[in-house]
Length: 119
Image (tube, rainbow, N blue to C red; front, side, top):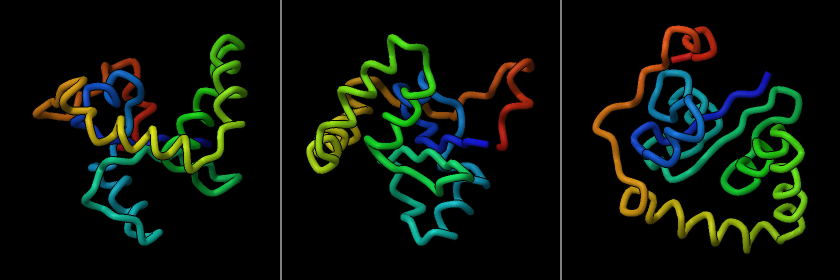
């Protein structure tokens, strides 16, 4: 099972995925791994088989699960050294509220998707 944790107040993140770093599961996950539980400028993919990925590597691992058109982006992106990818990720994370907006509340899943959510 793979679980995505993200900033639930970020409109870009909200439109991309639907699990939050601010939720109970997300907060426990961060604290158990000694990750910052108050700074939500990261994106985490928790894969029980591998451990977890953060930032640009997490995003690329998620894209890898999409159809072949998106997988091409994964293969082009993964060859870029992580320090360069994460630098670009940091710029996007720093400006995400300005560019994409910020929601006052985390979005609630529609009833048909609710069973896919932890909290």
